[in-house]
Amino acid sequence: MTRKKVAVIGSGNIGTDLMIKVLRRSAVLEMAAMVGIDPDSDGLARAARLGVPTTAKGVDGLIALPGFADIAVVFDATSAAAHRANAARLAPYGKTLIDLTPAAIGPYVVPAVNLEEHLGAGNVNMVTCGGQATIPIVAAISRITPVAYAEIVASIASRSAGPGTRANIDEFTETTAHAIETVGGARRGKAIIVLNPAEPPLIMRDTVHALIGEPSTHDAVRESIERMVASVAEYVPGYRLKQPVQITAVPPDQPVATLLADSSGIPPTHQVSVFLEVEGAAHYLPAYAGNLDIMTSAALRMAERV
Image 1 (tube, rainbow, N blue to C red):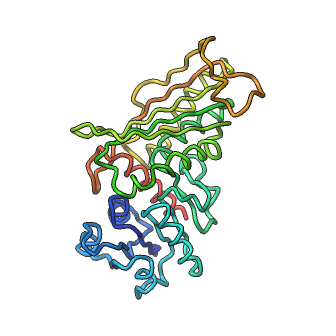
Image 2 (cartoon, rainbow, N blue to C red; image 1 turned 45 degrees about the vertical axis):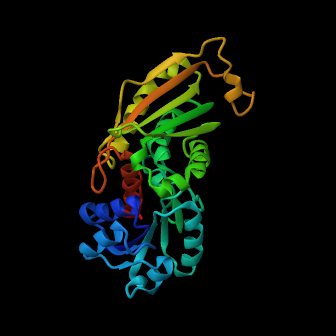
Image 3 (cartoon, rainbow, N blue to C red; image 1 turned 180 degrees about the vertical axis):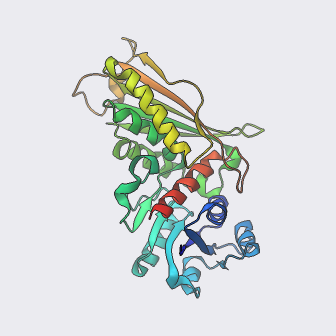
C-alpha cells in the first residue's frame, strides 16, 4: 500500500506527539515534514533525528520544501489565531487540513460520533481535548433521549498545558460548548476547563452532566454510554469510565430552568453524571497528558480515514 504523505505544523507538545504517532502507529500515513518557527524546539530536533524533513520557517517554509506537492494532509497543531493565517496561506494548494486548534474554520469532527460525515471537507476541526473526551458521551445520551442541557468539566494537569493550550483557553470554552450542541446534540452546552497544578500531575479527568427526562429510557442511556466508551477506547486505549454512570432525580427546589436554552418543551426531570479518565499513551509526554493523547489520536483516526 502506498502511504499518503502528511505534514505537521507546530513543533510543540501536540505536534510532536502526533508526529510520533504517525511514525509508530500508522500503516497508511508517512511523515513528510515537521514545521515550526523555533529552530531550537525539541520537536524539530526530534524530527531531524528521526529522519523527518523539517523547517523552522513556518507555513512558508513548508510550501518551499521540495516534497510539498506530494503532501496530501496537513495537521495544524499551533493556535487558533495561527491556524486562520495558515489556512489562508495553504488554501490555493488543495491540501486537506486537520485543525487541532479551536479555530473551528471547518466542521467539527469527533471520530466516534461523526467520522464519516465530513470526509470531503478541505478543513476539519478536532474541537478540543475536552470536547473529544466528552462530546461522545453527550451524543450517546442524545441518541436515546433529548438532552436539554449538557455541561462538561475537563480537568488537565497544568504541566501538560503548553503555551498553545493556554493561549486558546477562551476559544476552548466557546468551541467546546458549540460542539456539545452541534455534534453532541444537546439543546444547550457549556464547557469548563481546569488546569490542575497538583504535583505529582494528575491524569486527565472529565465530567459530563446532562439533564434529561423520560425515566423509562435510563437503562438504555447507561448501555448507550458504555458502548460509546468502548468505541472511543478503540483509538484512545486509555479512555475509560472512572465509575458507573449515575442518574438521579432533579430535586424540586433545584432551579434548572436557568440552564435551559428556552422554556419550551417538557422540563427535565433527571441528571445524568458521567465521570471519565483519559490516560495518555506516553508516546512523547507522560501518561498524565491524556488531553494531548486524545487530540492526537482523534486527528490520526481522521487522517487515516481520509
